[in-house]
Length: 128
Image 1: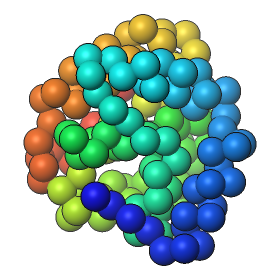
Image 2 (image 1 turned 30 degrees about the vertical axis):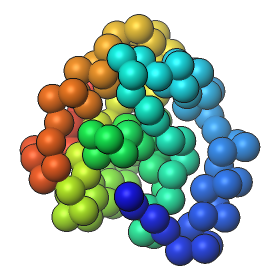
Image 3 (image 1 turned 90 degrees about the horizontal axis):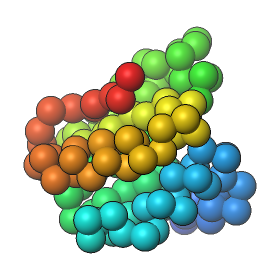
């Protein structure tokens, strides 16, 4: 299982209390364990905090707002996804707006991706 240093754990704890609307909306569905999948939210991993993490299938789900499209954010996201791959973990990136407008489709996409994922495979994926 991925873990982080104490500072990252404390930051994750704070983020659990201050999640965005898309994160709250998706968490309400994921904690129902769709298709038996168990997720952790705001999970510390190294120096990073993962929005949602399914340990069984080694899948991270990141909810990306518009800020992820600008500045150095795409490069930082790619570096993070690359590091996670070295840990045997895949990343699925989902636009925040998609969560708000197509929640059922997003959850189904997450379930399908989790069940088709495998350690060390594929790199970051996106729902766009």
